[in-house]
Image (tube, rainbow, N blue to C red; front, top):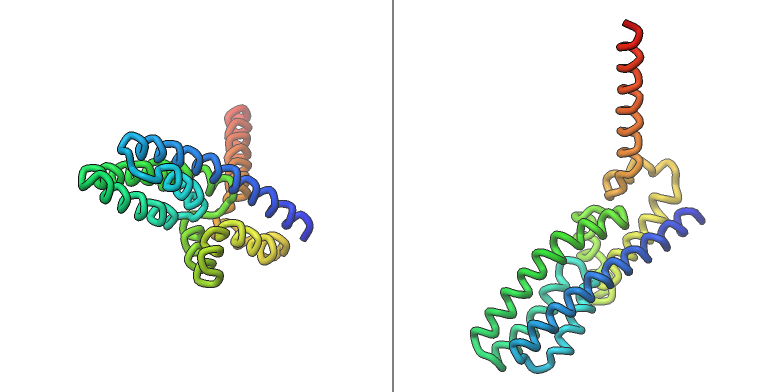
Length: 186
């Protein structure tokens, strides 16, 4: 149990650090765009983009709507289209492709489980649940799976593929060694 909770703390820290880094990148890029387009409240919208970066999958939409509406009101349709297009590109590149690869590899949760955890925890706890979905899922995994050796078979299903990868590497090395032994014997 102690090892499982220690692993939970390590994974939660990793998730928060990765999410903070990517959130800061998104916030800075958003701030630059909103400054160029002269959208009022650009600092607030950049801060919102940063905070919403902690909410997987739906945080982007939460940060997009107010910034896009303000751009429409202040700069008209061209500013609105620029904000929606830029936020879409940033979301596609950083928050949908790059960040999930880093985060899912860091915390050993697959993307489907992450998405389902956002739905589950936000339904259970509201906006705070959406914000804390990944750490809460990591805690549930530590208590229900990692602390019980008989639950080890569940790990690959939730995204922890380190043990199967290691076993596969060991099998490949053993097969290679066996092949070399047969080759030298003949």
